[in-house]
Image (cartoon, rainbow, N blue to C red; front, side, top):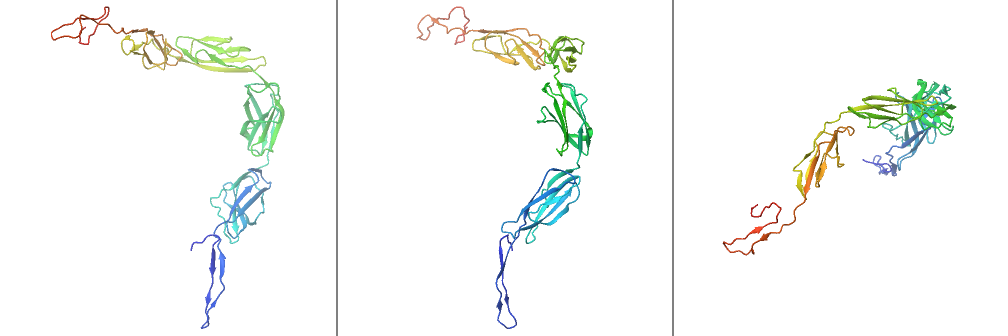
Length: 414
């Protein structure tokens, strides 16, 4: 028989003793509770210090029309160990306190109602937290507290005990901290950070480190470093980092102040080079800060002089057109009329030539010119005739077109 929570089952009996009349018992009934209760478990924090109390709270309810939620069991798993019972038939609305050791713990709850229906925990998601040992962190004073050049490395060092990972921050004002390193292994004992060009010279910066899992374990040193704004080193190329074979390219230092030195030995803001390869620029300022930049010049072959072609005659009539095109096999085309397509349609008179390139830097010589001549169409001609057109069989008529033209008559005469 299929029953659901809230259904009522009635029962009565008819009893007969020997030959006596039957005795009908009073009717009795029971309500059905066929469902399990449900619970929700919460823990105080995602990360705790081992040995400190963790409060486990469970909220539960029975299914609708059920017998009523009564108590619950609490289970836990530590790391990869099997499931263990923590509390059995723990009373409703009573928090349980757990003292974890080092490790990762996951807790599960199973509710129980008044007729001993028990919630399944198989496949149920647990609430987990990480328990870590109380650790110790201490920043070491900076050996470079005077001033650090922007663009150079600041080396942050520390001493750590019972801490696995740390986060590192800097602050310009002691209140707002900005992260520069996340989940750095504490055992590394040091971290190198490039000083950004955006940091101001007028500020003393603080450095703070803290346990990645427990922000209460931290260390701060005020006025850990200040910044020297060094000059910038940036190479600009006149030919998009390409150099045409047999040609030269101009390399320019974006920075004109300070002591400029190129890898070629030259010490001017601009140098002209004729060979492909790596070029390095070094800029030294009055603080002693050194910045550098490098650039790879790649050689590009200059194509041979191309030829321009047409799809038909170069002399065309008004209203007609001809296609002008360059040879295939190149990435870039440059026509003297401004077009950058390999081919285009010409409808007007003009003189055309094309240069080609593999990389939009090193172009060939322009091709020999192609002259397109568009001739205007003649006006509708007037035909002279020797007589009226009404002719009898055997009669003739003389027709004459205007002087200065070649003719093609509809009758086939020329």
